[in-house]
Image (cartoon, rainbow, N blue to C red):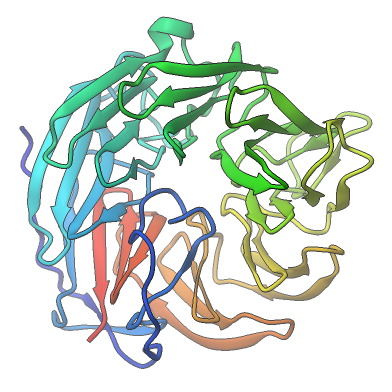
Amino acid sequence: MRVVMRTMLWLVLVATAAVLPAAEPSGPPWPAFRGTGDSRVKAAHLPVTWETRGRRGGSWTVRLPGYGQSSPVVWGNRVFVTAVSGPEKEHLHVLAINLADGQTVWQRDFEGTQRVPDGDTVSRGAPTPCVDAERLYVMFESGDVFALSHAGETLWQRSLVREYGEFKGPHGYGSSPLLADDKLIVQVCHGGPSYVLALDQATGENRWKADHPSQTGWSTPAMFDHDGTRGVIVSTSGSVRAFALEDGHELWRVTGIQGNSTPTPTVVGDVVVIGGSSEPTRSAPPEGMTTGSLAIRLGGQGDVSESHVLWKSPKVSAGYASPLVVDGLGYFVGRVGTLLCVDIQTGEVKWQHRLPGTAWASPVEVAGHLLFFCKEGSVIALKSGPELQEVGESTISATDVVYGVAAVEGVWLVRTGRSLVKIAAP
């Protein structure tokens, strides 16, 4: 078993400057991609700006095996994270790390079923795990799905590529699994036969499988509950589709769109916000297709492209990070770092701001503050609202790309390609 070495940083992040007032924490700490699905966190003591200086305050950095683009998840005093290694990403790694001191509690290593040459333009350990009180669920671009106990024991595993065919596409696989009631939802949308799969959380057996048009998608499915209907929303290049959580039948769809293959849908009330890129690519969208972001009113049946789309706009672009919605305003980060604040009911742009660079990590809101974690390590804090209000800028001591974040009481956890960084409140 590879040993995860805890490194001594010459620069360590210590929270100072702006620490939020007390608020009652609620819910699981950070159980999945984007926490509970909206990238919003309640915390009594969480820094929104910090200084980079000598090692203090319980902050730490741990070196991880291989490389990973997944976000950390947290349950209790444990942080769970994944990575891959090897020239064909054939080695799969799952780690449990002690939140207090960064020590590795356990590490489990597996061999991937599908092997794809590693490189900078393909996914590298991209799916974020999810965790509940009983199990940790992990998925890799090799098509392997595992359920582990909190002690690291393998409870069940599936090889989707053996069962349904290899994943096809030039950039790999990046969708994260979703916990929905007693099901684990897995979205496999690629260049081959595509599908959405609901697995039994306890056994890993199929509860249902819904075929999907072969459309590229790295986004993660999102759950909704509207007018007595519970379902999951899947956003892939070309369409947005909703499937019934109970049995997987298609509820509704929106078609004629493009560029929406990466950001995860954000559900707020009776609206789902879909991030899409409208920035230049090597080819123009096909005739009849529109690029950019949009908002859809939940409900309806069949094709609701005309009846339920509130707005769609090529001016509102979201590249890699998923839109963040707070108090009726959506925050969209484009591929070059242009941040837009948009009314989610009308699509009206309230303001725009240029970040220091693009962001692959999705932004997070805490107590009216918005934090944007840029790819190269800058962290921009703003206040949410219809007018631009800057709070401050901080830095992550990272030597490679910032991919994802998690927030729990008094702590930020930042995932870079090769490391996990803890930023602790003083």
